[in-house]
Length: 225
Length: 232
Image (cartoon, rainbow over all chains, first blue to last red; front, side, top):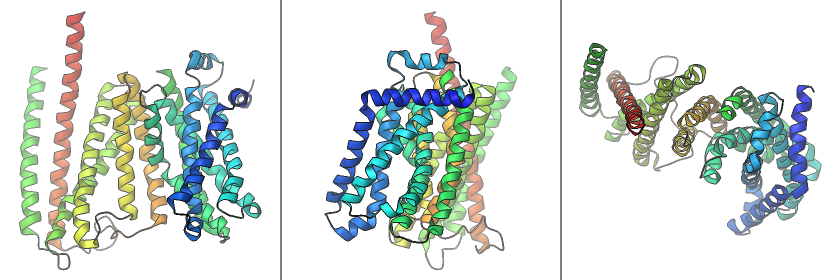
């Protein structure tokens, strides 16, 4: 088997497991909906205020939701010694990391795609004509979240306080992504010139690159111990 | 061996004395010798604590970065001890610098805290390395904790420029760097002297604390070893 097929095999395993119980997916979708729903009350139902803050709210909802999915993705490997089985799988450690990453990335992206219509309806936004541009922002941001999250949840998975530790490590590091995604989404939703989002896209690319390379170089050390 | 330890102890004591002298001179220059700022008045003297503290904490985090790489490469516990100790001091200095800056900011900018670019980056830096310390406290196996934290120290450090860039694009209000910029300095000469004197003093303090902290780490390991020996 080639490297790419091993990666896909691991990602496929995660996606099939997820599809069979749909536990993470349901929890994440419901959570994203709930956050978007509750933000309305935080802003007192003021329509102009809500429209101004909409992209920020959207990405906060996504950030919280991602943490939920990322923690579960690695957590699932702990039950029944799955992790040992995974490590016995004849693949490079890099392939295991990329496989887990692809699995988490797909699930988070799916939740985001499901959340877009909910967001559009609740916040009265026309996002449909802007969907391609919106995806251009969403994909690199989600990739960065999934990469940093997969790396960090490998560290926090066995800890007593893992539910608190993962966000505590993840959020400070991913602030560039949150800022970039929020500003980029603002540019798209306000129909501003897309060039304004370009620096943010480059920033996200730099972030994704750093975490991808960093993770691939160090993942082996994290799971061997 | 014994002789080496005695020389080491002598050096350490000399460093301790130098640190005290440096801090006394630095504080004297800062609070007595240097002139009060023409616009901001006496409160500007806080700069002589604020700036050296933050610059030395940057140095501390750079030491963490280098020591973490060396640990992953060589697998020597000593490098991990350096990284861990340096984070503790760096976090302390960063927190102090933010606190001092906040006290300075209140009369000058009119607010305790503002979401200015460099302030925000520093706060994120503090959070990131607090996470480092929390992770280390929570991982039971010391060698696992060391590896995790080394990875965190390296990636976290490399993430700083990206964080800084994003925050700068987001907004900026802080006065631009006065000392670390190209071109002629805009800071009066005796103010510069005060700043550099304190920078050296706090640098010495960092080195002294680092050595002390490493000794504690070594003593802890020794204690653990003796316990193991006694309990068999």
